Length: 438
Image (cartoon, rainbow, N blue to C red; front, side):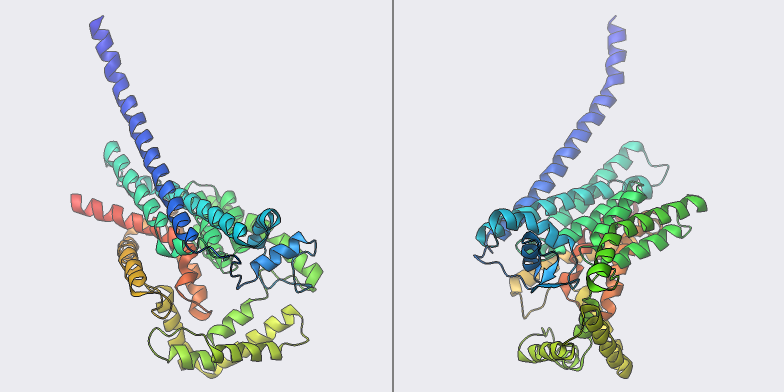
């Protein structure tokens, strides 16, 4: 009798241990989510304003929707900004107006998004241990490594300065990071249709993320996994079709309201010209180190752009500005090449511009970011990062970086891919641990 009891107990012990380990990991995940939320609230509450700044007119668009005028600015239908963020702001504006109460609600909303983003990053990273670990690795060791990289990806996402700074701002970075990370997480969990939905939503938040979806689809088609070709084609088309279905109502609306099926926005030409004009090159690209383009010369350029497009529809104005920027680029190929390098250095900078942030803030950003860059660099040297689905993190990061080779950029533009980079860097941590143990 005693012997039977002893055998039964020994059989149950591994199960109880596994359940205990799972419970411990979940507790740590919840703690990281709480840290992400609290950090954003703590920072955001120090930046509250009685009338929040709205440089991109998202609040104005939300008020237009609330007043029954549709997606309009100054009484005219517009597609100058993407629709998703103003739509999500509308209920808050309806309940709290656009003053300080709204600003508190915005901080809480974007803090919650930040916590969810950290959770999604951990959920994706939890699959890396299974994907990248050697098949002969002991199950217990594989589980331990998976747990570690999961928590590291979540921690890097939770306390990243770029993401925390976005909490009180009426801007799309926090939402874009959440949507893009949700897409990456779906890919790691083998849910291509779900990924297509999140990619579509991300594109309606920040149009540049559509390129991330495109490169991800191409990477899935490549023979970078054990999946048969038919499966890779099916997954790629699933992402493409669902993403297209999510975006299509916006294009149809623009066709009806603007006369043209604008797929994303009418802002692209302006963003291209903003980063490629004679004054910007003189003031920033070939100007003093860490220069930030602002002041009367920038305003004069903006005023000239407005004068050039008087009487044109939004799509017509977009094309005219884009053509002007393209002509400037073709006339100045060497300067353009230097400006491309300059934009990438800004995009991947470890610290923000000295003219905008204090030395302490810049130092903290650099100390926080450098380890992520090092681990991501190590990951890029490992074959496991170039296999599906980990290669999706590279495709997403490369997609957004490619956009900002030619378009306006600063370090803030990198914010949507920070969690994706944390997931990639977690694979670098895993590779490093495996190398040490050999």
